[in-house]
Image (cartoon, rainbow, N blue to C red; front, top):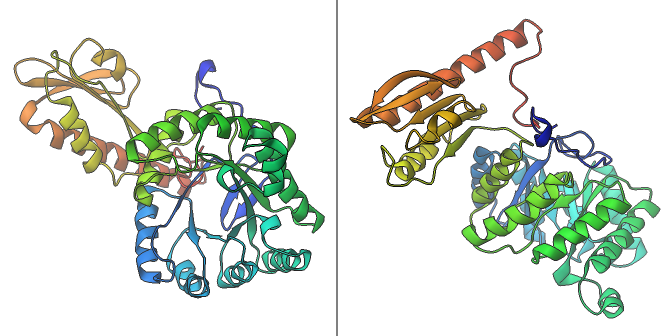
Length: 386
């Protein structure tokens, strides 16, 4: 259930559950948010610092590329210094996969058919078993196998799904089942169709994404259309928003997509109007400032910022705290949907920040009290919340 009204219900596809380190993927686990570093993995300190920024944004899983021995050599330090599971991205070279497993990677991103001989695949699978690694089969429209391109003439949903199932069979033939699958494409139609088709023919957990989606703005739009379509249909167990932007931006967009669908809840959800000539204060500037000032909060809370009384009272009914633009330099503050008091324009932002922080502190204190008393907490576990 994604909400408390019938029209907000999302029935998620039933998939088997695996683990990427401490993070459950599939089954009844919430959709997890991933990103990938863009530093040289061999530069352990730079990579660690980037992962920590992603952690602050709320990331669940981080992938790092391991193209050479220097990268896998740095992996053990990276794994030791961060608080989220690390996926090692491996292409072609089976030894890098084995080294990454030994270094503490929680998951290996490979295509078994590209690793080499059957013996090499067996060695990688054995390393995954020995070091408790899961595997992600990563099929991409831009790097499909030659025989599938010859068969289908171009990347299409059938080709992506056939590739995924061929790789899955290799792992299953080695009695390895702790894996998830992605069938990514930069074309939204192709990616969505491939994922929908794959979801219908298997119960493996699915890592969803629109690959090479583009810049921060265009890529966000593209990913929101594709991933939103899949998630609304109940498809997807873990996700990455692929942007030509910093990893923490990918994480924030991923969370916004999940929050918009009611699939996960973390931090402040701001409902705001686009502003117009009726606005009683500068809505755009106010929202930007509040997003920055409240970025540190993890406890779920809804906040409506509406410039005038046309929609302000109605939106305030649906949020924990609300502000509606008024006249004479004073604006109405709502609490739990009801008018509470007014605030002067010049002190409004500071006042809202104080109200939010006070409300959050009260929620967290009550949550701690209930946990201490052995009562079910008010708040969901923010790291695993649906």
